[in-house]
Length: 452
Ligand code: PHE
Image (cartoon, rainbow, N blue to C red; front, top):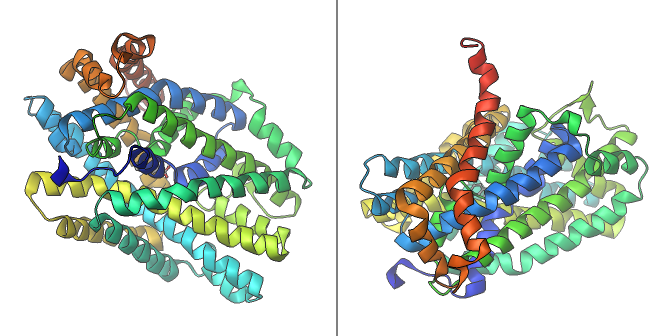
């Protein structure tokens, strides 16, 4: 185990897992999904998805990882002789690489906004426009994506604990402070009332199958579930760590940051609209991919002065680092697979997969409409599908009794507690049934064209 590397401290692991979870999923995807799908009603369904499906699955992934000490493909191979079992891991590796290809582009857009804010406040508005998402797109996006991928590769080559643990420790509290300060500012701007109502007062008549599928996919994406990222992180986990507790901490932290981001961005959209910025085009969002990037800089500009400048630069800097701790975990999955299963060195594995993903990401950088497509296929559908297979595998192939024995390590007594017992029921029955219902109801309209 030592040769494989371990997290330095107990807290180190929690920070790394939270670093993987907190990222653009919280601050870009969540508010965009809320704006696109039913406002507060989406938020309510999202909470249910996080805690009823997400949390049990997070525990499941961590247990599989720690028990086997392996990458996702190797982990399923170690736990079952069925030749199909490793396919679950392969699916995860594929989703990881594909998510990485659009994620670095968005992360690059975020990093470019650090420069946009500096130029704007220094009075160079042409240059500021160049760095904006809506500015001179392609080449700038490509350069920033490659830069972002290079940073990710560098840290992954450095190994698990050094970079990842340190980066997260001070970062998240700072991000929360800026979010809260900006929320306070936004709430006092004209137009924010409409946004608060949209975000906090659910209208359940807006719930449809599409909303539920999006909420579930969003929960998986934001919590980094369904592709084995947490199997991989769990494989570096010490046996004295309480997995149920760590997963609870990560789930709550991730949800809270997404919730705060929504509380900032949804009202800010309405404030921007009151200022004449076009957000909606006849009821639907004008641009879902760049919504957050259209709204936020405008907010910092309107704040103006030193606070606007510091807030803007710091916010995009912190968000870039939060995105980096997520891209690290995305790359770590295929890299750990190549290291374990094909005896490739860490350096070669990170370089090879990173370069392939960087190459694909160029396509996305020059045509941002790919972001939505890839997010829908590999995020909204791919991750819950992976999660379904992981639950079924754990509940019916590896068996929950074995998993409970693993859960007991680091949490004595949990095996026969209400939490332990209900976790087993969730993984075996409730989570797979919920995921299946969502899939069947949302895919049925498509199949219905031929069958019903
Ligand atoms: N959870 C990350 C985010 O919210 C994205 C991610 C998805 C990371 C899947 C790893 C695996 O930004």
